[in-house]
Amino acid sequence: MLEKGFEMNTTPSTPQIPSLSFATVSRGCMFHVLNYSPSMGRGGTTVTIDTLFNNDHTSWCHDVHIRIVIGSKPIPTVIKNIGGLEVPNLWRCSGTVPEFASQKYASTHTVNLSIEAIITRSVVDSVSFGFFTYRGYGKHADFFFV
Image 1: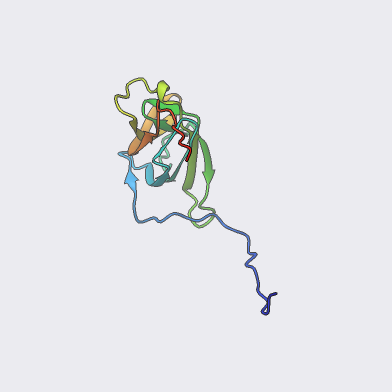
Image 2: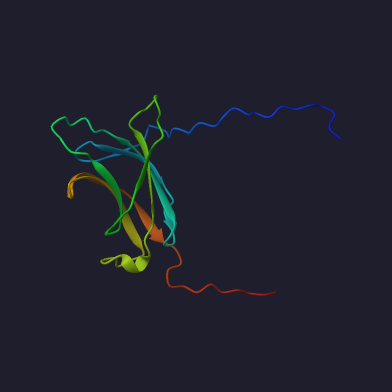
């Protein structure tokens, strides 16, 4: 039995804005990567990157597309604005990690993570900001019964 009543917080959740204190900045200053996750997993894992994207270059007359690159493999990338009116250039980029076998030049199971700005098949800015480690690649799971 409950003796005291209680209230639940039912306010609608808003996307949590990541800390703006740390950023890896691209050479052209279009990207300020704030954080990413996860840093390890298997092929099929969803990787998420939060970045400030500055597209103030008025000389561009084409749309800029953003893509994630895992190792040597560009992946289809979903982009979502998470800053709303408070931080309108804050974007969450996500994509599916490819299988390790698709990494052409990987000599280890840890590969670079990058993000690129593309205009008509040309990379106009990019930055490598972290690593992804393929966990358990090629290993069989052992089960022990006690």
